[in-house]
Image (cartoon, rainbow, N blue to C red):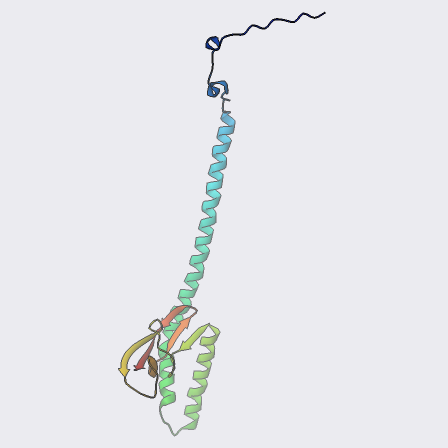
Length: 171
């Protein structure tokens, strides 16, 4: 036979209440774990820094190549202009004219192979981002903001303008 123990009721004032925060035991941080976390964080930062450096140098390399190509093309533009002037001059010597045409054709092929786009034709719409308007004329044969005369052709490589087209704009 089991005896039942009589439970005594303790008044609430006598019960010591401890806050929940105090009941949680703080586990001591292992110094090795702390050192590991610091080294890991340092390693991750170094890896991210190296990745940024790699991307930055790749971008600089690509832009330096594009800038070098644009500089080389810019040095060839006076040759292009002189050949264009020679083609526009009347001449009696057919062999001379044929030689200038062949030279101009070869230079144009080389520029095209380098990714150079030649722009600035009569009848195109005037774009201040690509054309340099040096004159203005009123002409009913052309629409508003239309190129009526080209003094110098423009050249660009991709989005980079090597030389603006020098033009006359109508209306």
